[in-house]
Length: 339
Image (cartoon, rainbow, N blue to C red; front, side):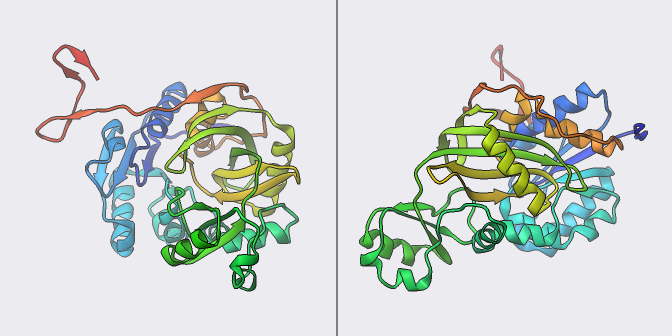
């Protein structure tokens, strides 16, 4: 298909936070394709580091403000002629899926899956039900009846919030006493069996019609605050084929992050997050470039499934500081040293 002519493709990254890598990936893809346009970063805090790596930054209300948050997004889309809106955190997904039409009336495309898909992914009980109904393996979720007899349970277990994110309040439970404490601490918890196995995060990318384009498994060597800190790209055929089946059943769009463990039983799925995960730049840099794919889709290109990414690449993520001057502007030079 011929490319659609566009003067500018402006991309809005929501809840930019620490997503410096993702913003830089969009910038590199834009430069590689020789496109014009801006990367706009939005966040509720002016201390979000990623704001200062974008071409334009905007401060918006908190997601919990609902109407005010959506109005701010609509205003940004209109003011900057945004082509694509990219969410990055779980807590905004349902709101965006419910208010998608309002935002897209500006001419922007919101990178959000159907509301039903989002509800499946955001509620861990819905996720469990979906996996079981479609024949996928998942850790057993304990029923209220099973939890009523904690002394008779096989430990360790795993507990997490039903609508949790970033591994907040997610714990391995070693005994009855710990279970009692965590059940009081965590709001709307779910309790599962704890499964042993090699943990993988899979980055999948689907076009706007839910056609699968790439599937990239990576071994989670180390994590920090729920995000991968060290990982290795693997073309694990078993996992890739199972994720293909999962995406065909779920039918999301855009970049999807799937977590699973390869156990004695097989591939057991843990979570499905319908957004860019923190470690997505690993798969992007390995050759499965979701940012470039998005630009190409916006240009009207048709993409085909491919496995043209490199494997056995090891990624080590690290922190870096930037300096803001008295006017809260990023400074690139200080005493002869470049930041």
